[in-house]
Image (cartoon, rainbow, N blue to C red):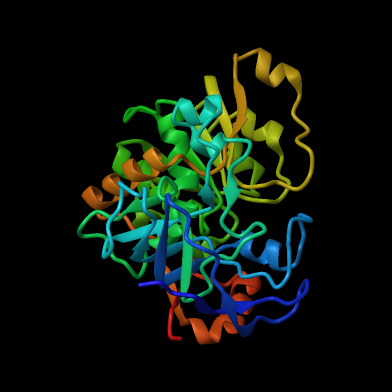
Length: 339
C-alpha cells in the first residue's frame, strides 16, 4: 500500500472553523509508520494551536494528537511495529535520538522533539504518520474508542508518579477534576494512595469519589483547605487558573511537592519561606516518554482505568470543538473517523 492523499479537517487561519480538505501525504520515511486513524481525542492544546495562541501554527493546520488507529504501512527500517498493529500516537511524532535525554530514555524532554501538530499534520485526518519510536502499541483489552486521551491527558498525570517514585502509602491531592484530574484520581487510587480531590464544582464531588477519591475539598474554600494542613506528600495541580498557592503549600508535609501539569497562566507567587521551612519542592512536567506511556497503558489495562469520554463523529468536529470550549465536557472528547 502506498497511500498518497488523505482527507482531513483543517483550520485555514487562526480561530476559523475547520473545513474538510484533501491533503498530500509526505513520503513515508524509512523509520516511520503510517496510521489509519480510527479515533482521535480533542485536547485544549488543539484549540491553542488552531487559534495560534503559542505562535507555532502553520496553516492549513490539521490538529489532533490523541490518535488511536491501525498501522497500514511501515518504512523499510521499521522493526518495532507491523502492519495491522493497533497503536496510539500522542504529542510527539519524532525525537532526535542523539541527545542525552533520548539516550537516557527521556524522549519527552528532547529539545528537538517534533510535535505531532507543530509544522506538520495531525490526527484530525484519515491518515497520520510518525516515527516508530513515538508510536506505542496498545495492549490487548484496552478500549480503542477511549484510549486516545491517554496519550496526552493520561500520560501527563501518570508521568509524575514514575518520576518522583510515588509510594502506595503516600497521601496525594489532585487540584481540578476535569480532563486531566479525573484520570489522575483513577491512577492514584489504583496506585494505592490516599487521594484527596480539590474541586470548585460541588456537582463533581460524587463523581470524584466514584473515581477513587477518598476525600473531596472545595478548592476555593480557605477554611476547608486549612483543615488539611501538613497532610500531603504530593499535590498535582491540573488547573490553568490562579489559586492561593501559599495556602496550598501549607497542606504539604515536610519534603512534600507541589507539582504542576496544568499551565497556570499567571506567575506563581510563592514565598521562599514556605519552601525552606519544610524542605518542600515545586515542579512541573510535560507528557511522558514512549516507555512511560507503555507502562501507563499496561497499568491502566491491569486496573481497568480509562477516561470518561463523549463521542462525536469526525464530521461534527466543529460541534465537538464548541463543546470543549464551553467547559461542559465530561471529561474528554473523542472523534470517530467517518470519512
